[in-house]
Image (cartoon, rainbow, N blue to C red):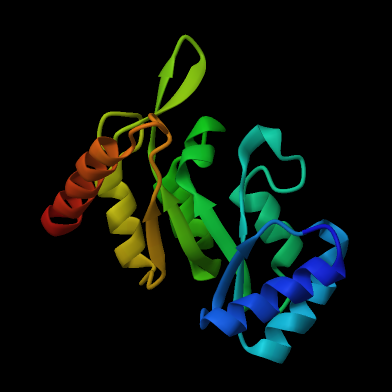
Length: 173
């Protein structure tokens, strides 16, 4: 989101379709306008971390530093894949900032020769048992949206495997 008009349109659209959480990446100077809109609509707004490629919000901490003094309905969409790519433990990040995490993008990543790539949940670097324990400890009530970008031409098998693994970890942890 680069303009107030784009922020306004997102809130209007969310109201029309009946959702009360918007995930976005607004320019820093738009945060006061986002704060005004969350009050006006009584919606939550979660800012998505995007790793090294995004200079605005590379980490959950960079988001928190920008929003910590704003309306608490402005929070974080924690993409755990980007957290692990940047050397952070997603469970520790969740424990530290969980009170402002309203959406979570769940995926797994593997590192081969310094290059991170997507893989099915359970086959990569993320400790999902620790993550589930952190979600429980913080009483997380938001969504966990599974992402699988390993095979965009035929993502269904990877998504199915990831969903099964994640459900099993939730049940057994």
